[in-house]
Image (cartoon, rainbow, N blue to C red; front, side):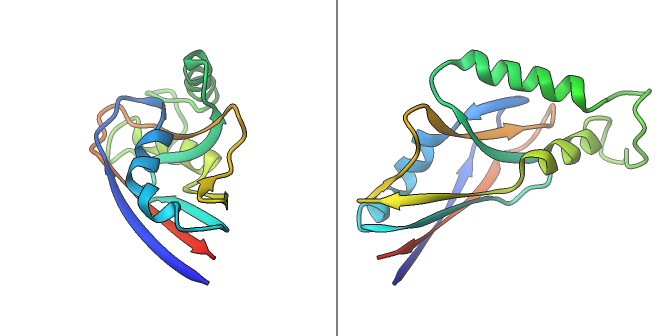
Amino acid sequence: MKFSQHEIRMPAMKRGCHLVTDRILKEIGSSLSGYKMGLANVFIQHTSASLTINENADPDVRKDMETFLSQTVPEGRGAPWVHTDEGPDDMPAHVKSSMFGASLTIPITQGRLNLGTWQGIWLCEHRDHASGRNIVVTLQGE
């Protein structure tokens, strides 16, 4: 069994869901190719952004997901949140982050992430004016 780990600094992104599969593969590709079978853990080190696996072809799906999140989690003066120290979009961002989660586990097969044909890794930014985000990818296997 072997392990490797990569820390990836993602640039600041606007609010919404962003397909980041290619960026992650660019950063981990040289290590990933050395694994015949294993698991990749992809973890975001933030509480107001999240990761999920979803549609990788039609960008309208990412727009629709942001619409769903915005309609599901209230923001603004009428929202029920007590935590408002970091702005009106902060507590809703924490809720949205918890809905999707901070980590993904993806199988590794023959040196590749074994995602389905239409699956990609999304970084979902839930703040209006976020800074860059840190992602840690840990590979384990043989």
